[in-house]
Amino acid sequence: MADQLTDDQLADLFAGLRADTVAAVLPPGADAARHTVRRRRQARAAVTGGLAVAAVAGVVGVAVAGTPAAPPAEPTGPLPTADRSALRDLAESVLPPDARSAAAWSFSLGDETSNTAGELPAGSYRMVVACAGDGGTDVLVRWTPRGEDNLFDPERAVVVATGETACAAAPSPATLRFVTPRDGEVMVSVEAVDGAAGRAGFAYRIVPAR
Image (cartoon, rainbow, N blue to C red; front, side, top):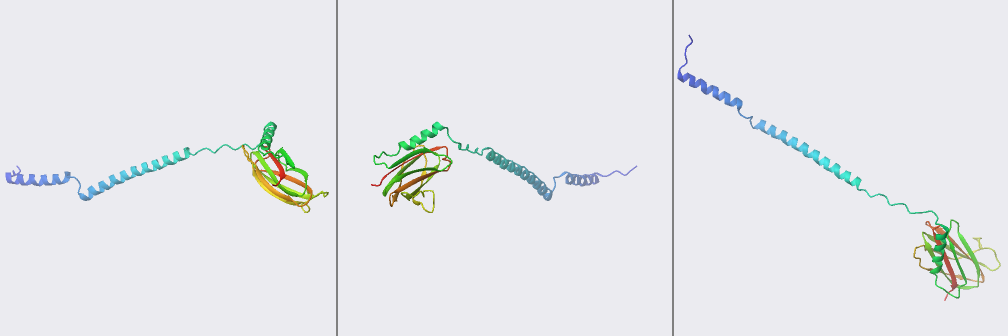
């Protein structure tokens, strides 16, 4: 029969077992705890980073979706004949009346340069012009002595005035000034620019300068 332990021996054995058991079931030490905290922080950072990326992507999506559409293109084709005639009449109507008028013309602007001519005695003149509609015009005034058919000859005809006019829905008259050194013939050339061809009317009146 095995020897029985005394009460003191049992007490010492129980105390040793209790110490070993408590050490085995206690929470991990400080190093292990810090490792666990780092893992949790990394997990939270990963989640926060994902939300930030998602938020940026959302902003980009809104910006793209909110981009305004391009404005519609302006009409460029020629107007109907009746509308072009109305613009011609409108341009003529804003020219101030003058009983001393030496020459006057009005016409619709087309793709080709409009040329009008007339005889003028030597003197100083004002040319009042107006353009109704879209775009603008380049104006060229040439003079040649009487009896010489040189208005289309750039080496013989003398340019006495040049100018630019802007066409408008509510046109206002503008003035060019020129001098004819002797009796002769004057040609006025008007070229449509900036979309005025087929969409504007032009008028001018030449009167002696005051």
